Image (tube, rainbow, N blue to C red; front, side, top):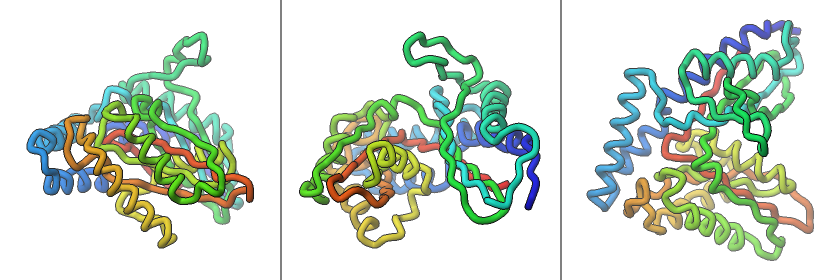
Length: 280
């Protein structure tokens, strides 16, 4: 049994909150650069150039890539041979979020109640999903989720008879309706299977996978490629200015489901698709 002090989790989370909001991930940067090379619209090439310039300024000055520094979402893998001393993992994470968003001068966007709308003033609580695994480590995956893109997601309970064409049609229609609102070029997360809630979580988790890593199952890897091609034919383009770079990637996560169902969820991220992974 390995003991980890809760203060170490809090410190790590604080650093993740600041870093993920201020530094563009290498996979996203490369995709934006590749988009500049292939984009057919000169106007949209200029948009992509400005997005990269914005990321460079944020990186050098350690200021947020976007003013919406998101609601803090964590996927946490806890080894069965780990004992956390001090606070619970949940409390340790929330303390880290509060410290990161305060010390990093990140916008605090969380309200304590969805209807009375009073700001918590430290961007807590985080949304946390746990998975218990073998080993003696804790793996933290952080994704600050801005709501310009979050608001454009969708969920549909398809019939099994709708099949893969039903999935494709729903994904494309969701992106088409989103238009320029999620600040494209976007990354599209798709969750297929499980229950209604599981599909939604899968679609969010899909956005934490680097976009240069395809689904490990060849069938779904091919579907990701097919969907990306179809999305980029919509003509929405960078920041809605038209062109061939509407999305940088489509990531799919799947899970077993009931014989009577085919749940599908779509979660969209803006061009920054901020995420960070640390293992303690």
